[in-house]
Length: 327
Ligand code: GLU
Image 1 (cartoon, rainbow, N blue to C red):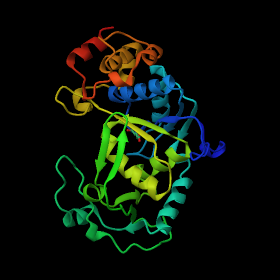
Image 2: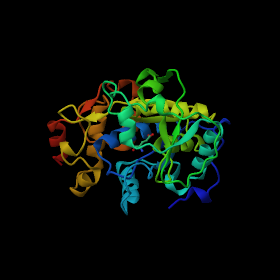
Image 3: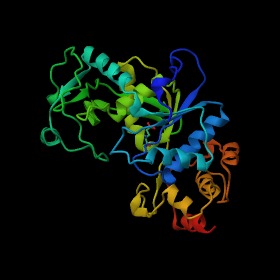
Image 4: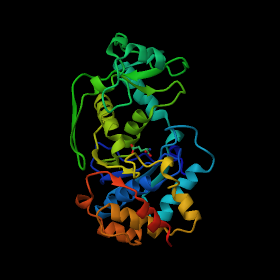
């Protein structure tokens, strides 16, 4: 498998290069129909607009990666008909750039070690904001900010980013204008974990920049993360990509597609002999391309129009499922 330590560096994102996007699956859970829709849209838009596509496997994000999970994830993307120009790059293979970023943040008094446990933080925090499961890290728990040396070899502490005051605003290509008061809703957040790893937020920012990513297309469950990522980009003087957050696929009960809605894993469909064209055809119908009909990825690419994708969440209905399984 491709190891980024052996490859020439990506072009400097500050210098002009081709527009670049990434497919960034986490191999920690099997790809399901919701992932298929996000990745297919990302891929199709990129191929239509001649963006370069980087495949990045985000294997530091979440629980331990099972043996074979990375290969299966890549295989399923190919099965759907997708391709890419660079990678696969395995995120955990090179964490040095994240360590460099930590040195920079710590040295600029923008990050600090934090030994507090979740229950200590909860005890000091006010109730979560409406609609959020996260409690904001209370400002009163932040130590005095001073330049520090980043020393990751301390299992007792994670490192937190000192969230700057003020509202983060950005224009999302799909979700429109966004305003996030990070200090109020999130507060200082973890950038380096007790497990000696960068957090998802830090790793994404560092990798997007070093891989020259200019366009991020993903599910709108990550809209709230975009504000954190922009704050980190500013602190590290890295460019901010253009964001495009798509509404998620939900089950008939209005909740995000998950195990409770049955087995919607792509490898289960494949094992049952469902052709990839059916999955792509279902995704196409969710993207405003007319009634369900089997479709190849290349036809999907030709016909997709980002502006025709419904702006509301998509529902995976029992009729969708029946159609998918009726080969
Ligand atoms: N690895 C994340 C996922 O599969 C995507 C992260 C991102 O696009 O920033 O949900």
